[in-house]
Amino acid sequence: MSNMVVRTNVFALNAHRNMKNVGLEQSRASNRLSSGYRINSAADDAAGLAISETMRAQIRGLDQASRNSQDGQAMLQTTEGGLEEIGNMLQRVRELIVQASNDTNTQDQRTMIEQEIAQLGQEISSMQQRVEFNTNRVLAMGPEVDFSEAIESFAEGIVELAEAYEEFSEAREEFDEARAEWNAAESAWLTAQSSGDPEAIAEAAEEYAEAAVEFGEALEEWTEAQEEWREAQDEWSGEFAGARSEILGEFRSASSNNHVAWFQVGANADQGIQFDFETVSRVVAVSGALVSMVAQGMVTLGTHGDGGVGHGEALSSMASDIQTALDELNSVRANLGAVQNRMDYTMRSLDVSSENLSDSESRVRNADMAREMMRFTMSNVLQQASISMLSQANQMPNNLLQILR
Image (cartoon, rainbow, N blue to C red; front, side, top):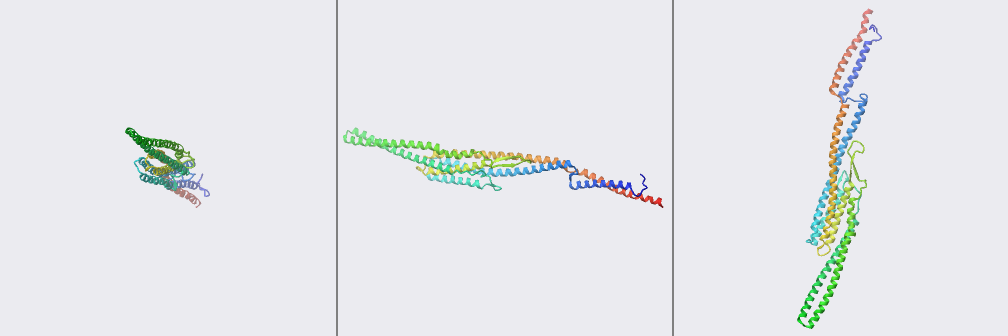
């Protein structure tokens, strides 16, 4: 095409078009350099934007899940700390039971031991209501269980056991006295016979007969007391032991799933760890009830008999209940520790996944600064050249003036 036209300057239009394209490229490079992102809008890379946004959602979910794991660990650590102190108290109660089971203790001494056990039982109940994490009572998140009737039944049973033992002891004392009198009367009768005095023989024989009758009655009463004592023991091991079974049975109660905590430790739905806080609540509640039962039994037995002597065996049997509570508590603590260790590995896995995913997202979204600087420099040079060419193209129509002169 000839350049000897005025109405259409093709050279200028061409220079203008190229300058505009270079300006767009320069603007895009400037935008990437200033933001640090290769993709600043969907127009930059539609597919890349979709991939990047999906990765970003996953990364943010992973980071929050990691923080959730840390919060969950803190909650479990608070729970385990409370259980540790309760375990220490149960250890002390068990130690006191072993001490009180020795019949060398007097009634007053057992009463003092019972006072410490009662205080420990109250502290266990107090801790269940006091230990909190973010206002959640972590030791009392299950349904409340009332053990008052079971403890009362236990106390009634142990009272009957103690009373039967007292009657047995009194009957044995009376039997021992009657036997001693009968032995003395028998000796007197034999002595009278050797003397040959009919009067003395008759009198000794009468006393000997009376002593024999009293001895027989005492033997009968003692035998009845023995049977009643055995019946009381059987009843204690049967009917009243049911109260202990009722309390201990709460250890095995099925969870209602209403107090199973969910720790969201994943970036997506249904990625979490569950922990049954109802089991924790039951263990603490049963432990407190058992300690109260021990205190009640100890004070009851301590007020019967000669300073409680003879009741050490009954007190000793309570140590097995506290040991059961300790075993259950240790089982819960072990589970707590296992879940905490699991969360440790979960956090590490989440952090590694977030790091790797962030690296992948960076490759899709972030700008290569050296490359963009190269493009910016190139477009800057081209823009200046375009301006120069446009200026030259605009001067071409002036050449026609030479012809028109």
